[in-house]
Image 1 (cartoon, rainbow, N blue to C red):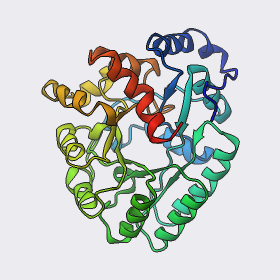
Image 2 (cartoon, rainbow, N blue to C red):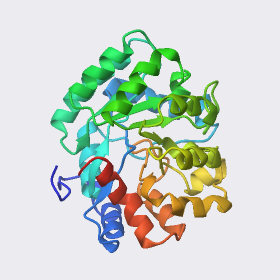
Image 3 (cartoon, rainbow, N blue to C red):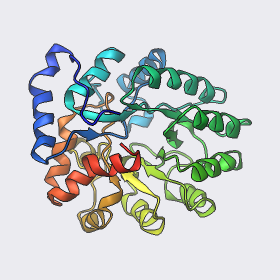
Image 4 (spheres, rainbow, N blue to C red):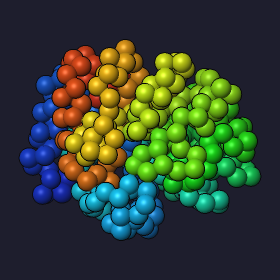
Length: 306
């Protein structure tokens, strides 16, 4: 991967002021760009269904109005991230039923091939054959997996997934997992199911999406207990998320102590606000420039060997 972000023309209405502000943000920190571990690219017909769900205020949105800010075509979205100076990003995709994960992984191989600054992403689901297709994805070069307990409505500690988690732990391939109960709880969300997974696979490199919102402190407990557990910042600390599930100020010192295991995530393009707002929210925490540099770039660059 190139040391500097690839510059490609972005959509005219965003390539100006917003991109300049984002680049000014990381430039002030002396960084070569950003590493965003939580961005969504998936087959267009799947993504359009996701957007329809947000538009319809489905129950998993927590009843909040959720206007999609970046509804451009795939190539324009990737170009916009480059214009922002995002050195590396992901194609977080996830199944909601059996038989879907292998198909999504096939699409992701092609997307990674044509998008070299995307960290090749794969997914999984508790079903017969999951170990086989997870192994195939790792052998094909997958560098990160995505699991969505809320949407998939499955127990991450399901015995069917056990060999797959073990395989990822042995391979050192991280998995970003939406397992907190925000924006709406599910049958298997919360810290207990994922704690059972970690008890079996303590070396598993889990990245807890949204910092485990709203069970922030319980997931911080897991990160403190397991040295390979990390948390991503996706949507947290923004005005939008603070209205839904405010982060407890008493826990801020724990973020400082875990500064080498907090990773920038945004949820692009499925954001109800501009990309810059996530960065500004992190800066407002006032945890220091060293912490901010680590979160916005260095931790992700080290994890993925950029």
